[in-house]
Image (tube, rainbow, N blue to C red):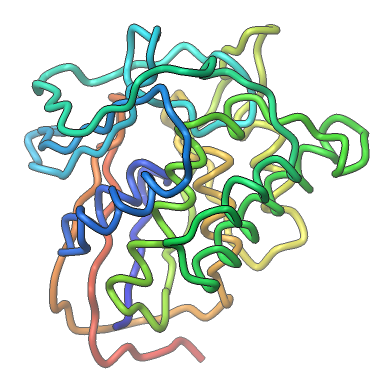
Length: 279
């Protein structure tokens, strides 16, 4: 299967999972994979959301003791988020809270969690850890420390582990062989975090994309469109090949948690046939 990611409103981990589920990937395999990680303190949401009148699949992770849905697939802490609450959450799968949701973990802690699963395939483990490694490298550059010393906050918390493992599990379930990406569109302005304001793209995203073959387009739309997890997914799977035409076989739409003034917060992932590559 070949996929085309259309990222005109950026990309985030939860949006990617939603789009892949909308394409027909197995929710049951996703839940089984997440269960195998041995983490607690969350509820999974599987429902639909209207974004600018467009029906999209909404996947979300609600953490215990949190009063809002996810939006945590960021390496910077405690953002304010503009969530879409026009739909009702359907908490189909929950786990008791046994550990604080904001545990700080380093890359070796995350490796133990992922490698400790007896359900995940070796390919899924490799891909998930590869994505985390990209984020760790970007964070080490942002903070001026060694990668092994990076202590993940939100990106190492429950929701982002779920996002990254979930994406790799669903891509494997669909039998994806090739992924092509549109240009990456990002908003402008500043992003509020616990320690003040960060410029958009936030430092982790900028570090992930530098020295890459990924084209970043800054649009006149205030707010963060690309999360570190989303950027790392693109960087990990991108081959740099661009396509100019293709036949659409199936479409999956993943809803984001924000509402922007000039763009619709969805990720459109298409199953395509007969892609023609640009020269």
